[in-house]
Amino acid sequence: MAIAKDFGFIGRLCLDLAHTGDMGYGARFERLTTPAELGRWLQLSPLRLPRVRISLQDLKSARMLRGAIWRVVGAVVGRTNPAAGDIRLMNRMARQPGLTRELDLAARSMHWHQPAAARALATIAQDAVMLLGDPTQRKRIRRCENAGCKVVFYDDSRPGLRRWCAANRCGDRMRARLYRKRHKTKSA
Ligand SMILES: [Zn+2]
Image (cartoon, rainbow, N blue to C red; front, top):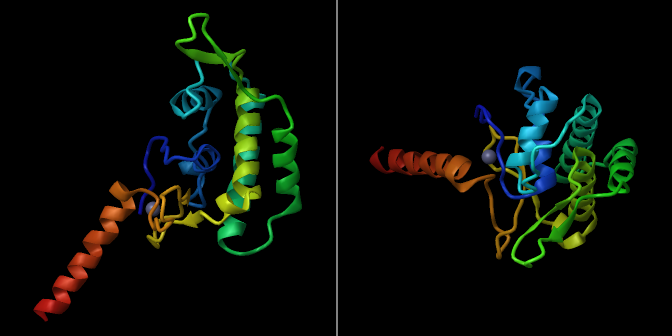
């Protein structure tokens, strides 16, 4: 399956960032090509970060964090040991000050206090620490069952039986394939 052209958000912040890389499909699938693209990702992401200045260093940090998350979750679903260097990097970024919310004075809405890309990355690193370190969340890290899809997702469904990265993407595709298969065997 070809990967989507624009950013995808499938419900878990740290994994969504992990999927902005080429995911092994080749360098032309890199999504975070410029600081501006990282800024756009942060605006579109569940963080809804307002437009902030993004430096080349922020971009570099985002790519490093993303690579570490991608490799470590890959190790988890592949049942292999993650690289200690990736864990150290994640921990180092998770220790930085993250985003904090504050209320407006009418207590009707909230916004980020001093939003910045570096803070957003710390928050994302914290999300990865939580996902990997909490046994109940870790158990729900899955690789999409569509063999052509490499997406790793967090199964937040109540029964925990989700099989595809997104029902309207691989789910539909796989169901259609199964239907065709059944149909063929019936008519044969
Ligand atoms: Zn999929």
